Length: 243
Image (cartoon, rainbow, N blue to C red; front, side):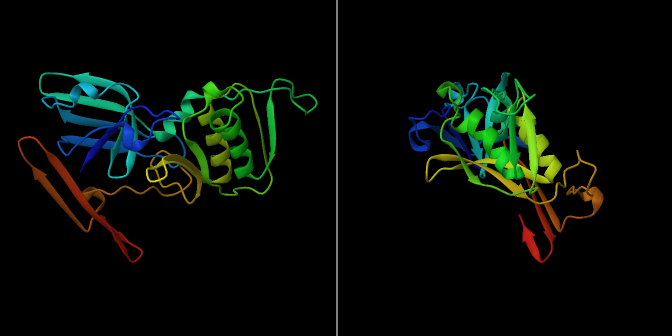
């Protein structure tokens, strides 16, 4: 695994200009990804490296195409532990604000109707991508892909977390969402996803966990050294093998 660290994003900087360092000196990485909601991670690095002083809150990390935002940092004499969220966590930082409603009896609420995708896009545009207050804009974020979800959907939001609004709409329509990075075009991409939530936190579908306990690993390799730990699993299904 190779870790790349980037300075917090702005409208003016780029992935190339904000690269702080890269390293393969990773002791361990744990990442819990969610179909709907904010994922979290914990990353441990050796403390005796020249780049350590560059690790601060809100730094972005990229490990094998997974993107993380650093929220907390712990250090001791041997290692540094970084924890935080994936890019979906940006939606936890915004609340839904509103102007004058056009719907009778809904004063104080931002009301929207349409497909689920249209409703989600409405709140994303107004509160993160192109808000009236430019200080609330999430840098370089665009809507890349929209899943319809329900044909007829609606929502009334009033000072809710944007992640809660988007999450409620997605769960009701059985779709997911994700924010990722497009390094080549210097953008962050928001997209809604058609699929089935197989995470352990939901109850609607049988969840999927790859583990020797469940006997669903084709093979497993564990390597241990003095400084690095690496776990590799090979999972197979539906005629395709993924590493």
